[in-house]
Image (cartoon, rainbow, N blue to C red):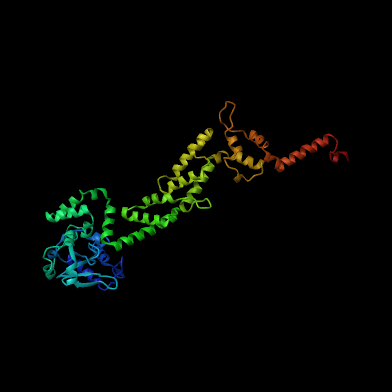
Amino acid sequence: MAVNGQDIGSYAQQFLGTPYVWGGNSLTSGVDCSGLVQQVFKHFGIGLPRVTYDQIGEGTAVSAKGLRPGDLVFFDTDRNVGGPDHVGIYLGDGKMIHNPRPGKAVEVVDMAKGYYMDRFMGGRRISGVSAVGSSASDFADGQTSKLTPEELAANYGWAYGFLNSNSELKEKFAEAIGSTWSPQKFQAELRDTSWWKTTSNARRKAQVMKKTDPATYNASIQAAEIQVRQLAAEVGAAVPTDKMKKIAASTVDGGLDEGQIRMALGDYVNFTKDGTLRGEAAMHEYTIKQYAGDMGIKLSDQAVKDQAQRIVRKVATTQDFESDVRDQAKSMFPAYAKQIDAGSTMRDVAGPYIQMMASELQMPDMSIDVMDPQIKRALNALDANGKPAGSTLTDFQSQLRNDPRWNKTTQAMNTTMSAADSVLKSMGLVSGGAEGQ
């Protein structure tokens, strides 16, 4: 059921005196002109865009003579920038409610007065609002003369300043005026232009905003830069200031989402002077190195960084990396492919060897990894048929006792001393203990 336009006007007047706050969305603590419009219509279940240049594209065009309560009215109050930069809600009898500028508050004014009459660009009737009540009265009488280019453009749902800034669109607009196209015809013709076909919807909106509402455009760029900086810190990307601004501009102009921003930030995930990554990338660096080490795979710093960048960009996952490492491990340790496929790491498989090596060579077991030459040799030892099967623990113990490090262990020293003592006893050079007493 359509909303009565007079009800919209009556509801809006409850907020007379609400202060002007640029970008504000509160009908009690502060709104700007387009914020007032958006929040009032939201109360009636009607969603509208946030800014003036978007709102003028909603609904259908209404001439000054056809204005009814609840219609939106648009004005060009800044002659230095073409296009609509102010909006209000028409109340009937030539009056509107709006929030004019900083330092002022929501008020009702007579549009028939010279300032607003001279700057009127057009009206829009929003879908879902019924056109009832008084007409534009004296205001319409002052507007029945030939419409200005700004008014004509507004009737087509576009800002004249923007149409005039693009040669292709300027030519199309001139043709529309000369042939008195309907708004539907104009929109159809626009969609057939090269500009429309080669420009994304997000980029089209950004171009219009930049031309017709530069303050909002610049605020959007600043907000995007904050978003990009926060995400860069989160993922561990060190982005130079000039590049940061370019990414922020691309975020607004191209409508980039988080995934696309991550793609851009991935180029700036690099090692610090102390050889580490930062942020989310540092977490991935640790995970990558830990898993590769447990699988007996040695990765270069470049390979680690490349993989961390891919995960940060979300073009790869940790699972993708682990699958690739498992394939490499099965190639390097073919005898243990089944254990690897079952979820074991090569450190799990090498556990008995690592424990024996730690015991025999008196080393902390955490200081021994799968890439240790002794461990690799034991894992890939061949059986009687010449196939990789792994050393027996007895053979591995013998192998360890041939390692120069074993000679420095307490056990080796005790064994040596015991052997020397036995030789001396057999030669009668030392006493056999209590037997001779």
